[in-house]
Image (tube, rainbow, N blue to C red):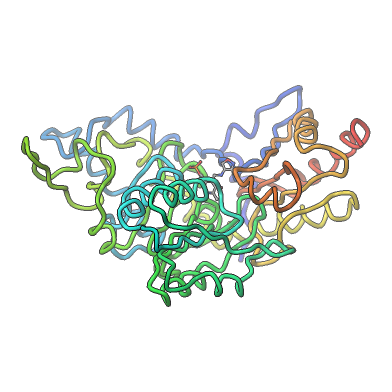
Length: 410
Ligand SMILES: Cc1ncc(COP(=O)(O)O)c(CNc2co[nH]c2=O)c1O
């Protein structure tokens, strides 16, 4: 695959030219949120400047244009993730977290009972883990966790043990935002289906960074966020198989999601609108559509290659330092574009603050995976996460800044 033209890509991100204390920003916090290229910003500005209007097909030109743009964004996302059912299988939410809550309240609260088990993994993000934990507490269902092994991979023998005929749902992260592990989500989905359980895949760190085909995985539900894939904040996606979404009750009510309302009762509109009450994120949908176009122009395979090269390079450079503990699998096809680590005798927050002195933006903390950090035996880690505009030179700057931390704290 031809390598990315990173310099040309960087020209579409004015923010990457910013300087603090006369040092150009080195943005390595992409697993938290990615930057937004000019074509996405321009598309959203164009919406607000030329065809801003409320949707649901008001009888005037501007509403028609806004409605078409909003509806077509669903079609474009469906095409991007291989959802052959089109817009009816793509629900726009606020973010991955809301997508997971939609599934938990619309399906989980109504379908789970004391005899049911929800199987998660130990590397789940709080958006999944806390959500299913709380729904299980309300429904009497139980939650179990597939073990993560020493290398940061899922113990699939343990998965086979846990997923049984009592399992109602397997909920797994596609790519861990802490370990970088790329999980065998097709295999997990097959295991779920062998026991008539549903599978939900949290794709927040996968859709932006590699080709994803939800039907190849055969996931029943799949979630991700616009702001992690060069798109705007304020929009996320819940993909669901049409027949499953048809059978689900909405949990948010209001205008735009109904078919008929009387004083006594209401009936619900068609998919996906049934799950999209009120005024939706219209400009954000336009931005997400533009982000999908922009990513596909580059090519998801090339994006994955670029990120895995940077992750490998960062892993090897950090490993060579000799006093850095790195979490997650060795570089390879089952490590995505991020590296979490700790520098001996230096707390992650101190290290990250030193990094900021060098205008290097990395993330310190538990990355909303506290149980995983408990298991790793550390309160926090520092995470460098890469995207299409990052370079090996930026990794070198990250490694060079470690010396300051050693001198100050070690
Ligand atoms: C695997 C995973 N799932 C769900 C979410 C929630 O996405 P949101 O609803 O768009 O916020 C995140 C965000 N992860 C991070 C957000 O900031 N740092 C992170 O690692 C994530 O990495």
